[in-house]
Image 1 (cartoon, rainbow, N blue to C red):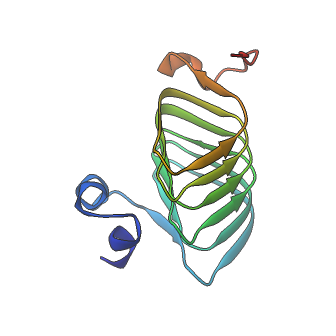
Image 2 (cartoon, rainbow, N blue to C red):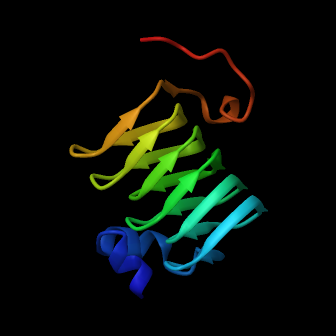
Length: 135
């Protein structure tokens, strides 16, 4: 139950219980490309590209340097790279993102940080290449 406590409470624990298929541990470093039909939780460092059908969770101690693409994405750690979520993309108050955000629904909590462009799209369109929108 430790990873759920790191993510900030009962709401996430209820959403994620039994869902996370792969974990990069706190003291682990992964470099390369990760693809899966399931979900992944990043507690350590990941350098490369993540593409999963399920959820991508970057815990408060986690760091990703590269592109992230998932069904839903929750950032409580740090991401230096673009993020695409077919459904919901959430940056929690401890989240730090340097990169463009694309999602069907985007939630940016007060206290979080991001630098980049934001694009809210129809969930079916998120995986397709598209011109960025400037606001």
